[in-house]
Each structure stands twice: as C-alpha cells, then as structure tokens.
Image (cartoon, rainbow, N blue to C red; front, side):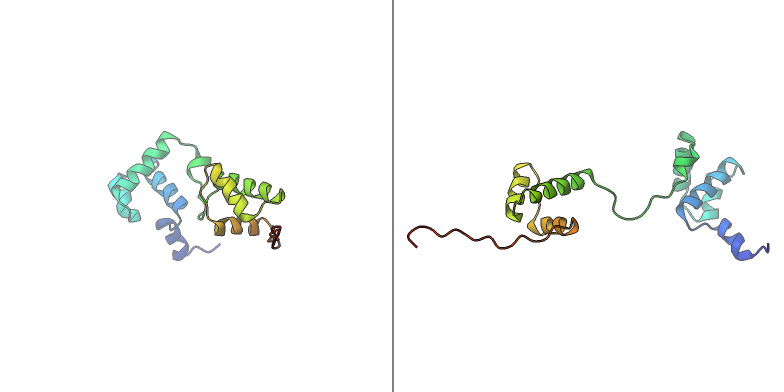
Length: 138
C-alpha cells in the first residue's frame, strides 16, 4: 500500500464530526495535549474541545459517543399519533372536514392542507363529492 500526503491529511484535519471527536479525545487522553493545543491543531474553539473531553469522560462508551447522528427530520411521536388517528378516521369514511373537527376536539390544531398531505402519503384517495340531500318542498 502506498502512503500519501492526502491520506495523512485526512487524519490531521478530520472533516467528519465523529472523526473529529475521536481525534480530539485521542489527542487529549493518549497524547496528553492541552485543550488549547488541540483547539489550535483542529481549528476549534477551546471550549468545544473541553466539552468533547468532558462528555467523553462522563460516559466513555465508544458505541454511544462516536456515533454519527443522521441529518434530517427526526421521528415525532405526536406526528405519528396524528397520522395514525387520521388514517383510522378516514377508514371510518370521515371527510377531511370531519377529521379536522375530530382532531380539534382531541386538542390537535392542524390545517386541512396538512391533513390532505397525511392522507396522500398514507395512500388514501380523495373521497368523491357527497351529494347534499335536497330539502322537501324544493
């Protein structure tokens, strides 16, 4: 295997957050560098280095500390509960307006456009136009 300066630079200047946390803790605990020296090496604020070291020392579990969090939206128990409730009400044959009123009674204030999106994403089709019964004498 050939060694290269490019590959060596990846370890000297890590760009991925998990790798940077590892290298900071490695420099502090293994190389016994000061927080100031580590901050200079990796272009960080000294406080950031101190926080990383403190957090790792408080819970030195490698399986938890050196894990990358995925970017993007996280799950929401409230959103999931609303989606399940909306789907159940649609299976009962409720219209968008009826579903919205029921959710309002349950304490959820959401728009009809959001409800329509939930139903669309769950695979429900639009209900056909309902006929309003004619009044006697008209």
